[in-house]
Length: 591
Image 1 (cartoon, rainbow, N blue to C red):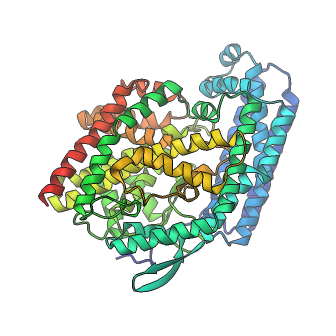
Image 2: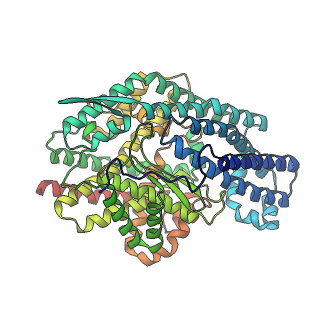
Image 3: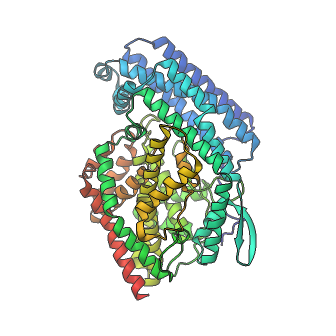
C-alpha cells in the first residue's frame, strides 16, 4: 500500500541529466539559436507575399515550438514542485526573454498572415493547406494587432508585469504556512494540506482548516489584490489598444467559441441552479445539518473507502483499458514510466495539472489524498495526457487547443471511471460515488458560474480604478450568494476564493473558468453518445481529439450532430446531472 513517503514523483532524468546539466544548457542554447533563425527569416521575408517563404517559415517554427515545449515543461517540473529550487528558478527566469522573443515572432507571423493572399498561398503550398485553420485565425487576429514595435514592447514588459505578478502569487501560495487550530491540538501545515482538510469526515477538522485558510489569505490579501489589479489592468489596457470590445470577446476568440454558444451554455446553467440546490439540501440532510457551510461542500457522504494511490491506479488502468486498448496502454505507460508527481509537499504548487513534455509524452502533477475525489482527478489529468497522445501526430501549430476543447478528453475520462464504478456499487458506496460526481458537477457549474461573475465584475470595476481587497471580497461573496443561493449558509461562504484560485492570475488567459463548464457539459454529452453507440463513437473520437486545434468548437461539435449555439444541448447534458440528483436524494432518504 502506498504511503505519503512512498508515493512516486515524476521522472525527469529521461529528458535531461539535471537542471544544471550540460545537455540541458546545450538544448537551451539550441533553442535560442532557433529563435534567432526565426527572427532572421521574418526579416528576410518582410513585406513579401511569398507562399514558399511562409511555408518554409511554418516548418521551422513548428520545430522551434516543439523544442521550446520540452524545455519549458522540463523547467516547470522543478519550479512547480519546489518553489525554493534556485537553479530551476534561475533557469525559468533565463527563459523569459526567449519566450518574449517568441511572442514577438508570433505577432509578426500574425501580421504576415493578415497581409498575404491566403487563397492563392494555400493553393501553392501543401504545408499552408495543412495549417489553413491556423492561418485564417491569424488573419482575423491581425485585425486586433497593435503596431509591431508596440507588440514587441508589450511582450517585453509582460516579463516584469503581468507574468511576474502571476509568478509572485504562485510562489507565495506554495510557501504559505498555515496554523490550524484543531479542538485538541495545533498543527502547522502547507496551504494545500490545510485546504485538503475540507475532505475530512470530522466537521470540526473541516471547520478548523477553513478558518485557518481564511485567516492566512487575509494576512496576505494586500499582495493578492495588488497582483490581481496589476494583471487585470494590463489585460484591459492591451485589449483596448488591440481593438477588442472586452477581455471576454478576446477570450472567446482564442477559445474558438462565439458569444452565442457561451450565452446558450450560461442560460442552461442558470436554469439548472435549483437542481444543484436540491443536491446541496440533500447533502445537508445526509450529514445531519440544516444547511451546509462552505467548509461542508467537500465533506464525504456514504461509505467511501480509503482510496490509496495504488488502488486508484488499478481502477483507472482497468476502466481505461475497458474503453480502448490505446487508452489503457497510455495509463499503463504513465504509471510505469513515472509521469506523475503524486504527493503533497512543502514548496509544491497546489491543485493538479497535466502538461505535454515531448512527442506523445506528458507529465502530471497531483497533490493526492486517499479520497475518490482524487481518483477522479487522476483520471481527469490522464485524460489530458490521452488528448496529448492523440494530438502528437499533429504539428505544434495544429495542436494549439483552446481551453474549451482542452477539457473534452479529461472530463470524458472522469465519466469513464466514475460511472463505471457507480453501475455495480451497493447503495452506500453508490451514494459516496454519486456524492463525488455531484460535488464535482456543482464545482464545475455553480462555482464556476460564480467565478465567471466575479471576474466579469472585477474587470468592470478595474476599468475605472484599482479595487481594494475588501471590494474583491464583497464581489466574491455577492457572486456566491447569487449562484449558491439558499443552498449554503450565507454566513459561512468563502470571501477569498479569488486568492485561492490561480486561474485569475494570468496575463495571457482571462476568464479561465467557463471552459471547465464547457468541458463538463460537452463531455457529458459525448459520454451519452458513447453509451448509445460505443463502436461508432470509438471510430471518430480519437480523430476529434486530434483535431481540437484545427476547427472551432461549433464545427467540431457538429461532427456529433451537436448544436452548441442553442440551450437545448446544454440542457440535455445538465439533465444527466438532474438524474444523478434524483438518485442521490433517494439514497439519502433510504440510508
